[in-house]
Image 1 (cartoon, rainbow, N blue to C red):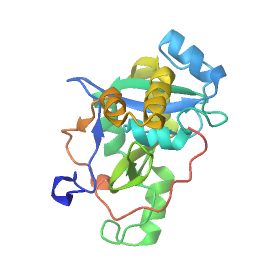
Image 2: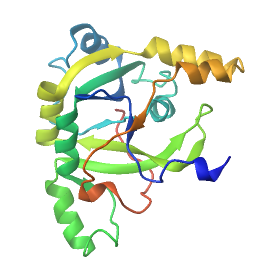
Image 3: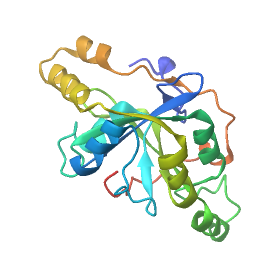
Length: 210
């Protein structure tokens, strides 16, 4: 691979419009199907727990095994208000300590306890779900951020499980060009870079399903 053509190591790339950004999550059918049907998260969606959103379709495929992992059978594309994402990033803390960002570990821990969002960078994935030498954003939302995400920022919710299966089938058939053509177009987000967005390499993800 020509390293000169690689994206920056830390860059948020997503399917986007002038007013919205698309992120991905995967749920069990009891949550995912009503959310896609109604275009919003059902009452059963727990607004008091942390939820992780991913702007990268292929990183979501890596996380949910193309929608085959138990409890992650329904893959959702959630279109959210761009301003909501900016708010979450502006109020986020890194999920790991970084000496070049934080004055000391104690101050990072204090900030992490109160921050409604967490920024984590994980290796982006290729069509075979192998890691790439640049990072993809995961954004954890809790408390106020999770409630806003579910009840204020969400513009639409689509079930993209059929797309996941189609891309996966093309990859398995060796039809890589067709698989690549099916992928959502993800371009760099033009956002004011909040403090936690740029940092050293994070520890591996420790997320609870979504």
